[in-house]
Length: 325
Figure 1: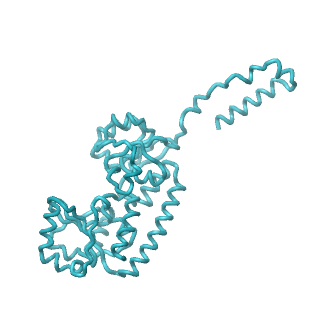
Figure 2 (figure 1 turned 120 degrees about the horizontal axis):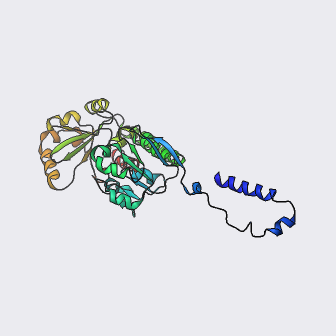
């Protein structure tokens, strides 16, 4: 707008200097002189937004160098490659190739590394401020930080919020429409294949037996994507806290939480492998319907690590292939 105003003013000035050719020949060098560059033109346009901590933050309308403490996958889905990312961004199997060239800022985030990247926007989870207060205070002096809480829907809240923040709402709408079409088709196929049979996700790690609920490690994909039915005990846990990721249970409770189908996450090495071998030896495990009917599906830990939108979408396809081959 400022450029247009300057051009208009320049045109008006030329008209007021005279209407004949004589005026033009008297000052041939006037139009050749460069116009002074407006200072405001060099400054990026900004907007004020409110993050999930209730803070009003002034951010670029079109950020060009974003550091993602988390949420790198969401930016990639919008066609934006962050200049830097926290460690978790590099653990997502499905986006590792696209993360080529992105700088690792560390965990905890290193303010010196962030400084060298010269970001104009930092997107970070609210938990960073809780566990890394000193680092985030320093980073906040480098660039504006927009904080996002994990305790909301990863697609319809987090992804949509990021898209609005960086001016990519059209791209987000297209992605969501495609995801919804895939999810609808997947649900139909799952219902036709297993009907109301139940599904549970178990993980054995560090000697602990846990069930995954409605978030991490395939939880969102299974419950909100495929709408797979949960056993009553698992459903009660989810209803009690829809944002809870997992619950540790004793081996004695295994039959109560086990579904007709079991997704099992356990690393095939070290203490985790040894702990699961002990569980396998128990009658509680061998007597489960899912075990007897051959409905135990091993999941690759690294693939199901994230709760980002790309992982949700890709694991939904893979899990469907296991439940409804």
